[in-house]
Image: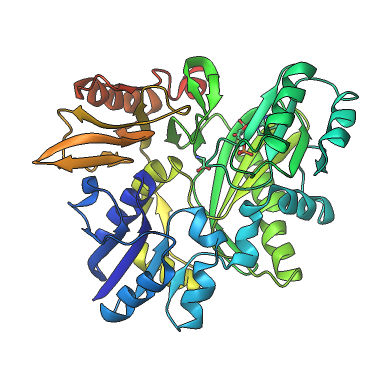
Length: 418
Ligand code: AMP
Ligand code: GLY
């Protein structure tokens, strides 16, 4: 029987730890650093996700068979390279492949070089040049910080003034901690978004069922971009032909392109797609599971998650399928997220034993749960269709009591509209 370590602390990692805990081959799951909501499926280990030496030492001392990395930060910082140098088994891309998420400029260059459909763009490091370019473009236009910014580094500017203000904030005034010193400016795409995730090993791409996230903070896609405010799977109003197009024209070519560049990819590849009137275009690549998409996708996944991961790493075709249910989940976030987050506000009536609640950012004191971050809880419902999943998820959401949480009330609205 195997021991597994999951790295990370959010709802995604709770779902990953839960999936491993159901495996018939897994005896014990650890999470570093995790959060107290995961204690029902894993033991928490108080080590930071970027403290590679301490993580390696834990893995060696405790005979961990497989380490699974949840978030992008340690991947971009080279955790997989470090573990492999020590001969330890770890699931995720090396730094030279994780850069597909770590640098939007790199990812756009790769798409251009290999003819992978995406929005037209230019990259800038000089504000005056960016300004001159923006003055000649049609609005709206999209500004993207090159580096990691927790899903918040994208601004959709409706007019030139807005675009120039934000370009200055990102390039000159260091908004997003310098991630925007290099700025990608790209064409605004209109259409319907979906997330296509796949297990990837070199050129082999094994897709999962698609999901749809809700990036904006408020109902009807109003407000700032967030890490994601809710998700559901499957997304039945996106035609099978569009999913195939995304697989054949985006995901498989990118996996192949990475091999051509000697940056062989291994791990989860996340493709953010836009179905436009001119076909599917890539919005972004991420080098790991999406959050909150994972919380619904892993509920729908049928198969032994540990065995799937081992097979992918060993270059074998993993065995899995997806069930016939719809899963829909609502993020309950701290008031004022994404601008700020709260810590220490009481949350009551969380059903601790339910596998339908994943903890994104909670703390626990004397048996009670408190907010501890921006996104706090992922509350999901399962149904035979989107309406039933929606009703069940929101019934649970309404039972949870807290003065410091808000949520969108329209998760799944595009599917219900058809
Ligand atoms: P990203 O971090 O690149 O996924 O961008 C965050 C969100 O911004 C996406 O999920 C889209 O909703 C939106 N977005 C990004 N790029 C574009 C684009 N070129 N056109 C329209 N919306 C975009
Ligand atoms: N849900 C979007 C992301 O994980 O980047």
